[in-house]
Image (cartoon, rainbow, N blue to C red; front, side, top):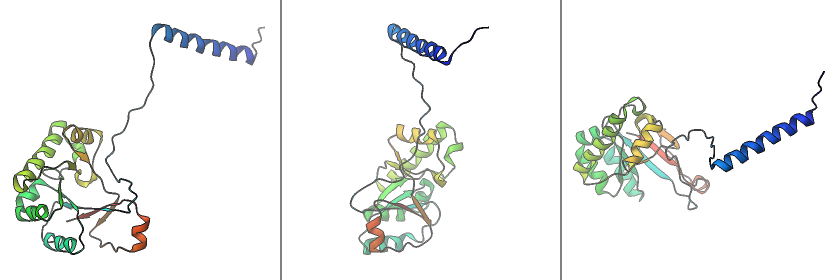
Length: 198
């Protein structure tokens, strides 16, 4: 009967690992093990100034736009409006008003489809067609993209980036809820991307 001690087994495995390392060093090959990196959009950006970012998604109606713009002007606040291309075509005056009042226009796709189920070509077409529509109506080139419904995957973000877009997501979604601002809340918040659906 042969008895193998733990120490013998440990020495054997250490020797085996050392031999493998020497073999790889001699051959100049390095074996890397890694997991795929998941693409994620920008949810927030830290800042030390206590600033927040307010965004609006323009996909359905436009009746609130004049009132929203009036309030933003009254409070001396600038916002980003993620505009669907089809919405911009139906509401060219409101689209121009947003840009003329110094707010940022951004890309929210051409037709408000769920992006993660589309082909690569269709994703690119949705982003680029919206960009073209916004530029034709307002003269503004966009570089921010938000996927409709917040529906994205690695492919959506990668295609947006390849075409010069930063993909932006919200960190607090208010839908149609009014947000009350207080001094204490502003002091505690470094950056929140608030989204309001129109």
